[in-house]
Image 1 (cartoon, rainbow over the protein chains, first blue to last red):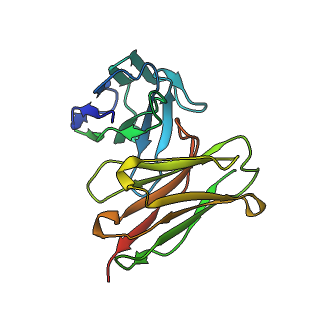
Image 2 (tube, chains in turn yellow, red):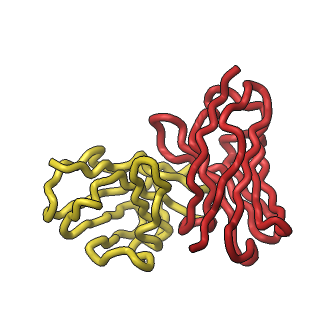
Length: 110
Length: 115
């Protein structure tokens, strides 16, 4: 089972600041990694897949990078609507099909 | 706007079977995978499994064979059955489209296991 560990647990920032979120996998997942934004009372929203490919309609202030075991989600300039919980998820199909999520990073307003 | 609409009971008794359904509001189930995920209170999201439109399935081994995901293409629905539930199965359950990247989610259903 691939375990994803996100850091930090909470990020306290102000609007306009840069947010850098980390996701580390217990073994290589190549680029089979996605990022989601989750707000209270809503369903998660896919932001990034294949480690760095932004979903349609996601603002370009969101970017993803990384390969193998270390991944980063960057929000270049925080907007008020960006304060939320963020999860990473791996979807590697080898050697067996299994999906797992990180424990989440909360981006909160300072 | 295409939506996934979840339905099913919010309360299930211990040892009984949890059953949830997800309906695609527009389009068809063809050429896609359809996934169930859950989030127990205070815990991370947990993958349950998925079904391909052909009917083939994959499940999380942590559920020890208790989960079944099936399709009803005539109703544009897919369903989750989880047998022999216990308190640890209390969670918000989500359906979603996709097998890896999940790009359309249902609204979520809180299912509480309690007598």
